[in-house]
Length: 208
Image (cartoon, rainbow, N blue to C red; front, side, top):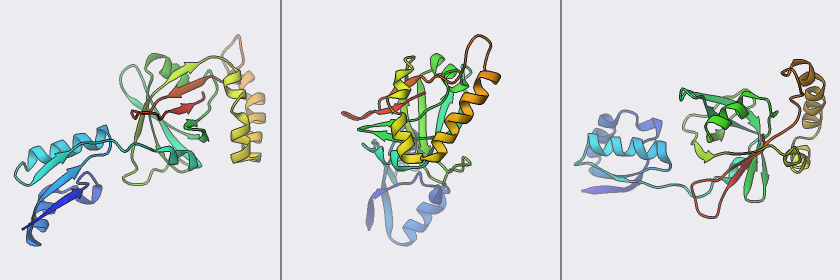
């Protein structure tokens, strides 16, 4: 009799728990210690253990470091409306020491939602917002900083990473935003948002 001492039953490949356990027993694997990585997968792991208490034992945890998100060209940033509805948006991202930074105009919907609810989630995505199956969410709690210098202080990081794309986007924004923004001011200013990860000694920064 064998026991799988570390498996991720929350993976989409094991969506059919009964079939997964049936195949395991057919190969003399009679039980599994299922491991979660974050709040979402921890909940899925607990559900699996509750559904098959004699075969699945839950082990809950958090992966301590997702700073590799700073190496992605794009991430999906999810903010939440007052109704609780999640609103995902694809954004650029850079690394700033032990922090991550993303930017958006201070008048954007993301900033308005963050003023009501600081909870955020990030995960890797493509330019068009395509997310790979199984891509893991990284939760955070945002704190908005209205100082325009917060954006100016990290703009060189975006220019170094994205080059002409970033410079072009900033020119277009300065031209378009004053025309389409709300009356009484331009939306081209930036606001900073700092989001600590749920791990000791690590935090990310999202500059909005």
